[in-house]
Image 1 (cartoon, one colour):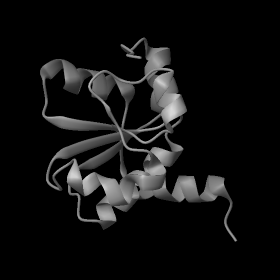
Image 2 (spheres, rainbow, N blue to C red):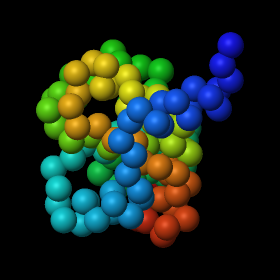
Image 3 (cartoon, one colour):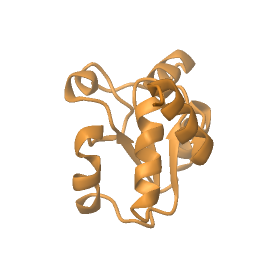
Image 4 (cartoon, rainbow, N blue to C red):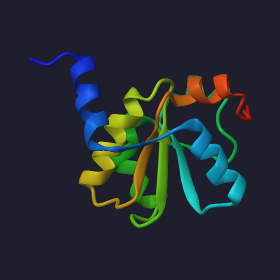
Length: 118
């Protein structure tokens, strides 16, 4: 049996990760991307990235198709980068072709001094 830490590490090895600075730069350039917060609503309400949409990890697979085209650039984030890594792997399996997880998650974004809404 694998531990949660092992699952997270394996997922991170199989996906694309971007830094909070890379996300900030992409947003500043006006890149066409979908920022998806996979945290829970109570976490979202405490603050989130400007322009992000909330699709909690527990409903991501059933809700994402109605909100995000499969060929759109997608950046997922959670609190630390673990849930978003699993989510990125799942979206890749669903046929999303340009998906990344933000390493360090919302904490990394806030520590970098990124703008926060909410």
